Image (cartoon, rainbow, N blue to C red; front, side, top):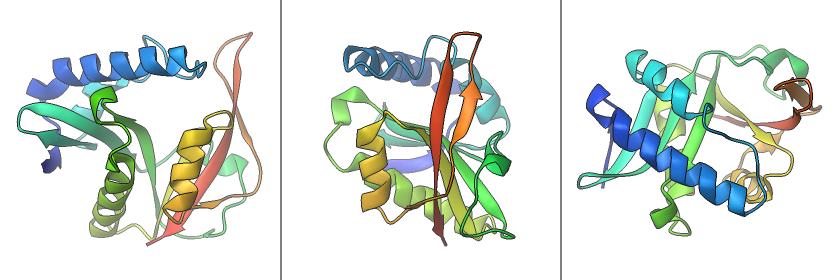
Length: 168
């Protein structure tokens, strides 16, 4: 498998992989992502050179974005206040590669890239009902920050998100 920055030529396959992830999440009752998020953000991530992918030959196995800021960053009390964080966003694993340790592998890649980019810690947000993701983050050594970020999606939907972080 190869880990690399995503390129424009990857966009169509990336969007297809994420659409399948969304369908799978919906089947599990996790209505967190939809037709717009994260698919419509992947092109901008590629342009900004912050979207990383893991491939198995020509197949995209997983992806994530590393961002310098996050909308909910000031809503929580982080253990690593005053540091230079990077934020992990849009971590997704191709549904044909689940339960193979790919999520843990991607978190390790994210930490390595964050170190190279000069970050002191890696942070992320996860919706409170996404128990599988929360278990993965805790198993991987990330620590939950204090507080909850409530992200209003529209007039009827507000996501309750926990923050997690790890010192690099």
